[in-house]
Length: 132
Image 1 (tube, helix red, strand yellow):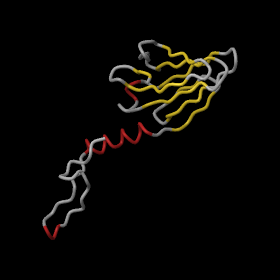
Image 2 (cartoon, rainbow, N blue to C red):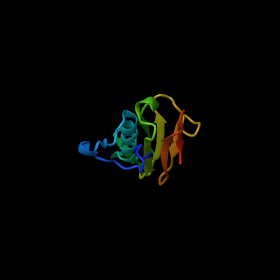
Image 3 (cartoon, helix red, strand yellow):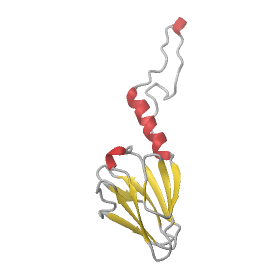
Image 4 (cartoon, rainbow, N blue to C red):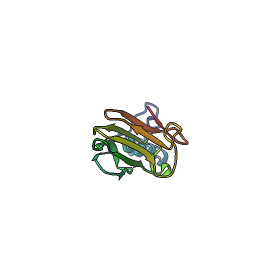
């Protein structure tokens, strides 16, 4: 994240008696801060049935039963911030499938398949989703 646009990169209250202005906080800076906060956090979802994640989720523990394939949906690309990440782990004995609700690809495929024990982090690349 970029620091605030001041000489030393810090916030200053200013001093009206001395004619010193406080740090000007712009919408651009506040929006960048908001995106940073959103992308770092997120609630945890543990599910053994089909589920749709949203902007509030950050971690998915997929828990499909043995012999079962369960599909989970990450939100539409345009509905989450540029820095949004989803951490996913298949903690079940079945197969977890991840797709994007708007048909965007994940690593070039419409569906990402996770075997038991597999894990990944899904991030935006400017056009589609990628795993890291």
